[in-house]
Image (cartoon, rainbow, N blue to C red; front, side, top):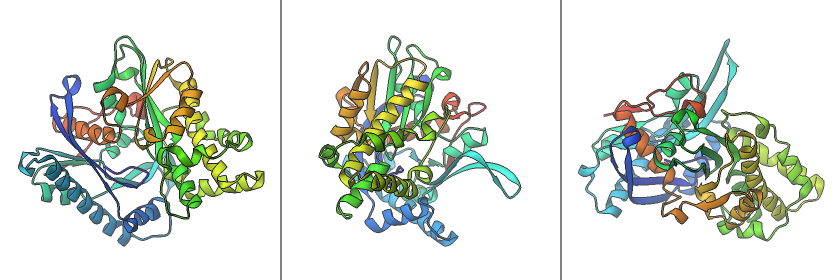
Amino acid sequence: MSGTSADGIDAALTRISGYGTATKAELASFLFTPFPPAVREAVLAVAGGRKTCAADFCRLKTLLGGLYAEACLALCRQAGIPISQVDLVGSHGQTVWHIPQPEDYLGRTIAGTLQIGEDSVIAEAMGCPVVGDFRVRDMAAGGQGAPLVPYTEYLLYREEERTVALQNIGGIGNVTVLPAGCALEDVTAFDTGPGNMVMDALVQRLTDGRLTYDKGGRLAAGGTVSKELLAWMLADPYLEKKPPKTTGREVYGEAYVARLLARADGLGVGLQDVLATATRFTAEAIAVGLDRFAPAPPERLVVGGGGSWNRTLLDHLRDCLPGCRVVTNEDLGFNSDAKEAVAFAILANEAVFASCNNAPSATGARNPVVMGKLSI
């Protein structure tokens, strides 16, 4: 898979047995492959709503399929596993547009989502079935097509005696709350707002493009949080919206960053301080979401995704959630970077068993469905 940060491809080699609540999954190997700068720029151009044409979508869809296939092959080489031993590939693809709420279009009201990356190219390279394009089936059932990881988190992380929340911080932040002893219908999950997306855009401006993200949160740590700018960010109407809710680059992309910088300029806030404030905002948005919408206060928050390596962000989270123990997947012996890729391996496994693999309580779908299209 590749996420909303569009920084590259996460590939996880996963041993899976069983399905449904009998699922057992073990990470065998993980490989991150950065996108070449020109590819990342092409993805961001399409996903950012810049002027483009159908030919660009066609080219990019096929190109990404080839890059995903190369990542699979490289992962097998790294693990010393012949491709003949790979039974199945799950591919999320690259989200380039997401419309979770119905809009008027040509006399109809529609919602939709678009992930690209040609699965047939992967199937041809790997010689095995590929399950991809998961989100659209949930949307056909009235859901928002996201978040999808809560189903796998329910299978792997639920506890009988303790309420656990799992916070992924990729380009967008998303949280899953698993109440103690919960059933699938008790799971609450939603996008908390921007994760790394706004911070990454500010880092690129701050460093004139030399850096694409704030490694360890060091740049943000050198700035000062602006109370006035933070208050403006916290007035975001998305934070008030009740779940099920999802968001993406169409909300927190280039136009949002431009408005943020204009507001900062009016307040006399420098760019490094804007970054410090945006970092604090990501943590505040998570805390606000949990306070308003979690069915029970979590006793532990497990943080994954690229943002889990941002120490400044984690410090802000601990400050915003004083009654909750904030840990990372690494603290529990897991791999934060691989977590979402493993999730889509599990979702693909569920699909080939014809097992419903969405969480309607999280996505808002009318009913459980089997997500994923099969390329043989």
